[in-house]
Length: 638
Image (cartoon, rainbow, N blue to C red; front, top):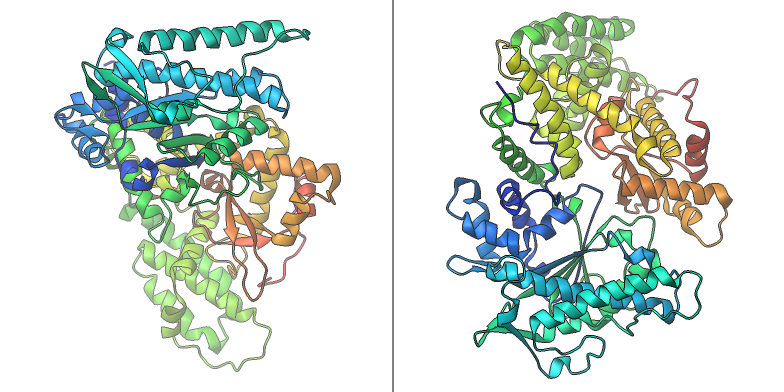
């Protein structure tokens, strides 16, 4: 039997994917999280790490993709998607697309322009962007109307009202075809003269005093057979991070100052460590609206908001192959079988007895130990966890410095102290000591993805290969067992860290820093009394430490600049997750650097966020350059 290629290896935003195929695998769940504000006039910035879904969102609103959704509106695959596009006002049930979405990319060309900050060097950048917006807009009209190529352009005329009278750099031609030819010629001219520019003092590149394409786009009328077309417009500029910093700042600043009447979506990778986005005087939330994609899934429900989206993405991919039947989640066993639990029962009891043996004759813990022994007679995951919960509580109580009477602690007190964090610490300790599977099941797969679609697909691709292999071998159960899932996922996590030096500019130092943070977190997580339950998965720089790193005084010198570059790259590439830490009565504000959740699997750390430890910039510099070394001895409860 010939199997299809792994459907999880193809990324959703790839240009090689046809519009129809893209529509079929697009998950509509992201539309539910997309604010209506994003479709109002103004500058809207979408940020995420690579693979977070920025380009996918933008491509979904291009005319050709919207028309694919409309044409297939009656299919089972699109029964969820189509109504949401109608609700957003971008599709009409009878007429098709109601939004002219213009998508351009900054991935090539702009950085080739002369570098500098003077108005002379900014002009060619504006001119190039303007002609590309004009050309892409006119070409998108054909897709909007349902025609191929430019066959409809001769029937479209352009009209200009008062709003466009001040436009100087874009000619007010009435023919759509003629304006498209002007834009194409203008772009070729820029590149031709750019080729001749090097070493010449006489060449003058085409230049503009301001970005006029937005003014043009929101003022021009497209008319066909006496009827105005595409009055609802959206300009989408992707890959903003590929511009030089000054180009990016110029673009955002001038677009913001223009206060556009149409929505402008700018998509870029996450900027980190204080790199400014806001133009002078602009306010986030009024002049600029920011949408960090990872935070779209945040809030009180946390990962439980991301899981339905992730499952929808996985199931739509699963539908594009015929090697395996059923939904993706149906092939991942979510629970240990009784015989699997039984194999861990006696080793867990033995580990418990060895640990509490010094306290067996202490009346203070007699009821706790007796309760744990009684419950261990019935081997379930819960009873195994209770043994380790009891063990942690005994270690905590025994480590207290104050004197206490040796009165028996009531067994009921365990229930009072037991909580999800403590149970999480017990579970990760069971995994560490006895290899009880931990990294398995759909929910933990989604957590490991760290709210990133590409990470989700990468992990799912490895699991899919395991599912297919299991089917080929005709094993009794069609599901991957928890142990099999964990083996595959941890191998994927190991590869993630192994390839860091090959995939990042400061890769070798980044790998050493990540490995050091992981080792430090492990040391703090697996203390007997689990003081930071369920565990430590990040480090924090206080506000004063952040000022050392970012301040103009450069107190850390060249090593500080190097650390800043490495941290910026780690955050931008989703190796570290940056979260703000609020001030409290005991500490000042700061920034937490959490390990990517897939990397937590590599280090055998819990997947919950919350546990962190304060470090200094010098700690991170030493770890980055020389690696972390464990302490000889840690005091209990430190």
